[in-house]
Length: 182
Length: 182
DNA sequence: TTGCTAAACGGAGACACTCTCCGTATGGTG
DNA sequence: CACCATACGGAGAGTGTCTCCGTTTAGCAA
Image 1 (cartoon, rainbow over the protein chains, first blue to last red):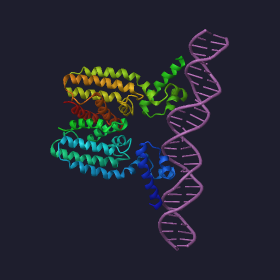
Image 2 (tube, protein in one colour):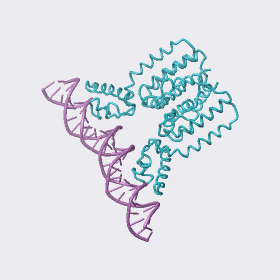
Image 3 (cartoon, helix red, strand yellow):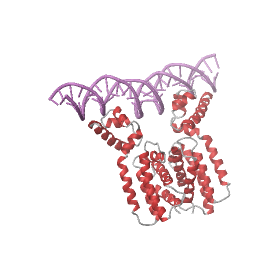
Image 4 (spheres, helix red, strand yellow):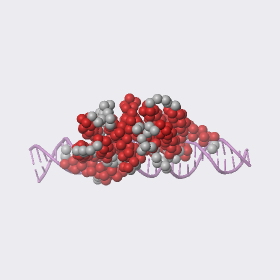
């Protein structure tokens, strides 16, 4: 890749990250291009679809998922709190910008989604949590990581779209936790 | 209201119902106007916003909610099945057209929403279910109707946006049921 | 350094959707 | 049957998406 191309690409991603956070996932792409000081053509060449851009924006985020999972896994205490803790972390991870939860959760389990890379990473992280719980024999047999992602994702979507405060979200996550544990 | 006005209004609602079901809540309003054989101005005069139109489209649906609730309440059998039954009915009710679950669930509990009438009806129906469960002492104390709507709504959103089949939805509703019961 | 070319740029503009304004048409009434 | 409040509908402004293509430039080879 040519140096100028890389420079522009990076700049677009950086601007997009800000704009998505400020204005949500629906922000105008031409506007992002303008703010990045490039023409719309340049933006669309680098990122043919909105999802492609989102995918790039989220690259940094990938590392955070692993970190967060590591941290949650060190928790020593009641299993229920452990699960609720994971759910809260999960919701926070997918709620980085408005519209994120819906985007991610509806792509969950869909192999050919444009953001499949990202959902696979989340699923992998959740699988680690599931394995941990299975080892303790604390999880219901008929529950898998995909379901956990969808359930917590559902709550996150509702919270995101309805603008719910954390104190309204936690009780719902507790209900989920009680539902998935033995 | 003048006769021609009423005729046009009814026709628009009828067409909108079809189009929303076929194409989802994002369908073009000008297109609906065209299909109804009226100008965009006419559509927008009758329904200043997309939500106003949706509200009109859903009027019939209101009756169905009450009916369905009545029916669910006659069920005699295990409490868990009763709750799962209600959740399934709830999800079906709000999934009449694509995008419906998100629209309804994010408006849930928001007083000044354009579709507040509809969410209040759903909330009322769910309250009847909650009362029934309370009488049996089967429900957790810290759970209310609003939470139930949001939880089931979350699952419905995920199912709707991800195109999940019923057999993927039911287990999640069972988990919810186990979470909310004592 | 210079010249060449593939790669990249960027903006004009086609297309689509939303929503409004206003000249025209008409139903209902006195 | 004449009047006019009510309703119609389409032209068009505003905004966003996305493409095409003429212009520019980075990077390399001589």
